[in-house]
Image (cartoon, rainbow, N blue to C red; front, side):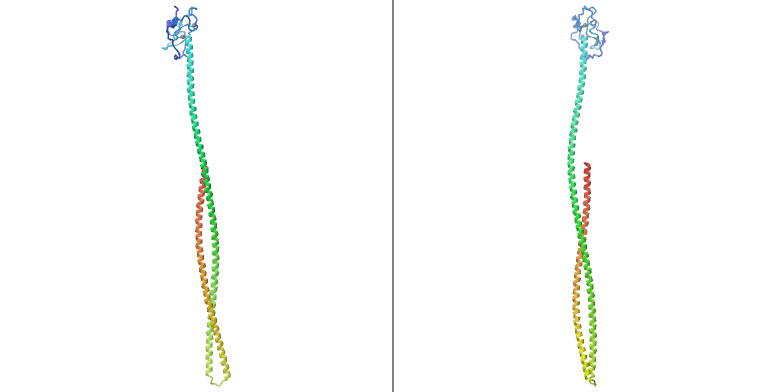
Length: 348
Ligand SMILES: [Zn+2]
Ligand SMILES: [Zn+2]
């Protein structure tokens, strides 16, 4: 029977290279722990153990197959963690498994990272989708706001236009009223002038009346004087008649009498004329008084018209004041609306 180091000792396999890089999880064990006993040739190089005397039969503590020492130069931890002989075949397989495992681990790691990246990408995609949706919403809102602003702007422009028109109409009204007022003023002046003329005329008429009255007084005085003279003449005539018995020239007396009679007759005629003239003057005075009364009535009528004119003028002034207040209010309104318009433009 050949001597077997691995089989006989079962120790820590001194002289073998330690394989610390091998992970115990990659090491597998054979089912039959006595498998090496039937092996006549090395399980790694297939050479018979009997060919060379120095090629002693050892066995792998993992696959339990017979191997040369030169075909099992490594050791690896067994189930108890002890470093024992491992054949090159098991060693290679373990290394391959380990590499495979490591690769698998790397692959898993890469896959996890990939998953993470995919997740992140999806999250980013969702984020972008949400942002795009939000941007679309904002753009739509912005568009709506633009439309609304345009509508408001148009509305304000229309309002402003309408107010400007109203203002213009009011200005025209004021111009018209100012014109009416000016023409009323002119008419009033003309009436004042007419009244002044009429007053002057009345003064002239009153002066004329006074002159007529003076004339009548003079005539009355003249009549009185004539009557007195008449009386004295009659007295003289009577005294002459009383001394008719005296021796006087009857012719001269008759002549004197005739003379006197003629004078009396003249005086009577003059008196008649004076009375007639007096009557005429009285008639004229009456007509002048009538005329005076009618002129006064006319003046009163003019003055009444003047009062009415003054009243309507003060009403017109009040109307203008009211319109001016309205215009001022409208101007303030326009200023306010334009400010609003400017604000909405600035917002845009
Ligand atoms: Zn061998
Ligand atoms: Zn082995």
